[in-house]
Length: 163
Image 1 (tube, rainbow, N blue to C red):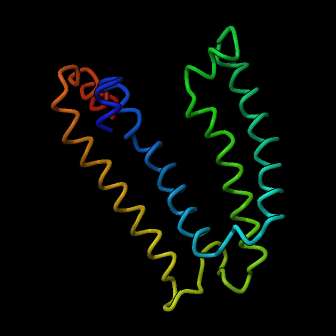
Image 2 (cartoon, helix red, strand yellow):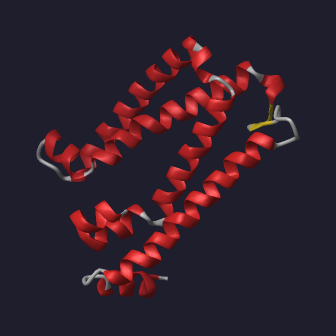
Image 3 (tube, rainbow, N blue to C red):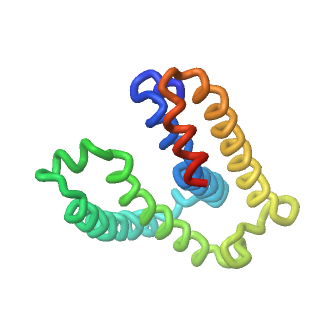
């Protein structure tokens, strides 16, 4: 966030610490905790299939987004939002791999939630606490950094007037 504040100013800080982006990062953290504790990496075929799904779906989403973006070239589209381009590939990979692990290890999951910790919902609890800590950190950094940057008034005013 400090890097974003120095390079892009408050508009970048506001965008990268906004609720939708923080929510996506929270879901990614949850995925990392669950996949790390359930050894996705042992499932080589799941990774391959998930990469295939990510490539097809990510390409389709990026083509659709590029067509409606108004950019003249693909390189302009990619440079205008590299995180968005990557996100269109990462999200399908995460969904496909999570589904593969949950389906191959059915005894370790209750619906979508892992249940095989030392206590019921241990892994889910750890993941949710990690996501909550990350969210609190982002909100705190936003509250600390935004008022200290000189050009923050128009963003804060726009956010409060739209709410």
